[in-house]
Length: 119
Image 1 (cartoon, one colour):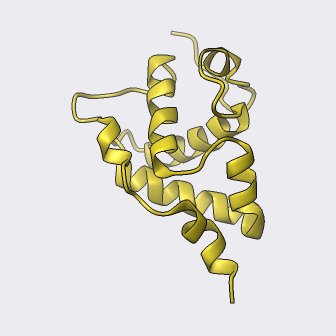
Image 2: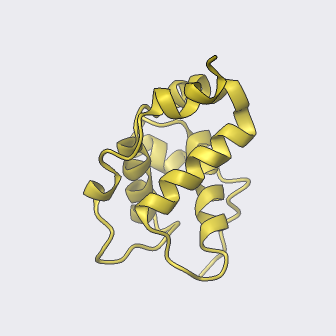
Image 3: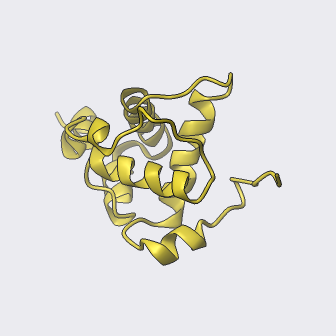
């Protein structure tokens, strides 16, 4: 199987099927998945959502909410949708315990990405 260069991947094939999310959002999520699974472990929804929040805040600081919403992400459910799109495109693996419902609720995007910067 050919190895995919995720840093150079534009995710055009996924965006062509589901244009709700920008290709850069997929690249950010892939960075999160690679970080969490570097030792071969399977990442659960909670870990993915938490690391996604930390990574976005680290990379974009006070602009994280604006960047993410411009890329089409408004909730943790969107992270889940993107995860399943990545699995369908065979960029990541999926097991029988992975469910869309695992991403429902999560955290409030506005609070998670704007809250740390409000006084």
